Structure formats: C-alpha cells, structure tokens
Length: 186
Image (cartoon, rainbow, N blue to C red; front, side, top):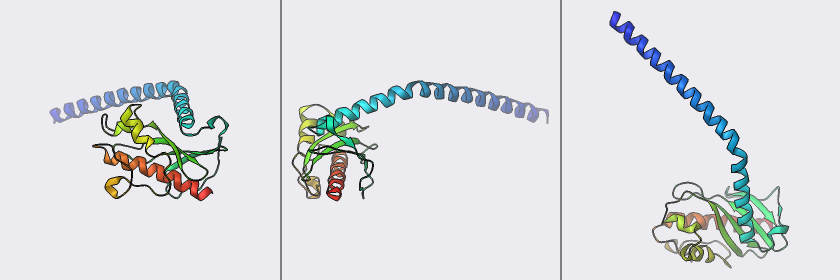
C-alpha cells in the first residue's frame, strides 16, 4: 500500500513538472511568434511583389481584385492591370502546397510563372522554383500556352521535371486554375 502511494505521488509530481515546463515553453514560443510575425508578413509581401513583377509586365499598375471566380479553390489572389492578370495560386505538390504567381494576358495566354514558396524535395521538385537553367526552362515552357494543360505523361505538352512528376503536375494544375479563372472573368 505504501509503495503504491509513493509511486502515485512520484507520477503526480512528474506530471505537474512536465505540465509547468510545457506551459512555460508554449508561452515563450507565443512571445517569439508575436515578435517575428510582422517580419514574416513583410517578407511574404516582398516575395509576392517580386513574383508579381516577374509575371506581369506592368505590375506596378496592377490592382488587387476583391472578387473573382474560382471553381478550383486554388486561386487566392488576383491582380489586374491593363496588360492582364497575375493570379496567386496554391496547388498541392509532393510535400505540401506550392504558392506561385501566374501571369495571364487578356487573351488567355500565360505570361509567366513564378514560385513564391514551396517545401518540395531539394534537387527534384524544388528545381521548379530555382533560378537555374533547368528551373527557368521548366517555368518558361508555360509562356504562351493557353487552354487546359497537362504533363506529357498525362498526354499533354508540358515536360515534367525528371523525378518530380507530382510537382510538375501541381505547377500545371496551378497554371490551369489561373487560366480557368481568367477565362471566367473575360
């Protein structure tokens, strides 16, 4: 009986200690989040502006639209200018969502694709966002395309990145969502 009381007291003491430690760590993490949240938001905004400029020739005159049609659920923001649209899309890649900006002219042709953020596999899917000849060639192949696109493995005319078919399909799905949204607006 005495042994079980001692053991119960030890378990209770360890549980309370663990609860206090985790509570303090949660408070520290919440404080750090409060301190860094504005910087993180500012960095995200800078990446979005850079991507907007990369896909829309007159990006400095683009205005954010409050409403837009999106049957896919992938379009999160639309910017409109005289030359066309820049659409922020978030398709699901191999590891997580890929946030990208797609420029589309008023006639429904892709002007450019820029990846804002991703967590794809380095050396494979991450190539889609890299400023390397391979990454740029992958993104540039979309320029001038219109309609519904598909990766060549699926009978389309988009060349997939070697070893990164899922990422290639995700980027293509994002471009398709942007094209469909622009088509619905016109």
